[in-house]
Image (cartoon, rainbow, N blue to C red; front, side, top):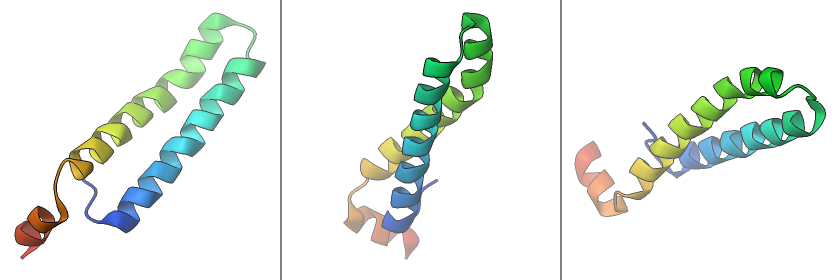
Length: 69
């Protein structure tokens, strides 16, 4: 789970890099089956990280401070 804004920014950066990689593969891979096999792991990791971001952003900073105290 994301614990602070620094970790949030790192996760958002990772998501962007994974999305760029998927976009690149989408443009260079000619075979649809190979494409799906190549990107499935990236897409699963993007989904997992986006869920972490959503969970972190759903908590107000004051609530985080209470939880960490």
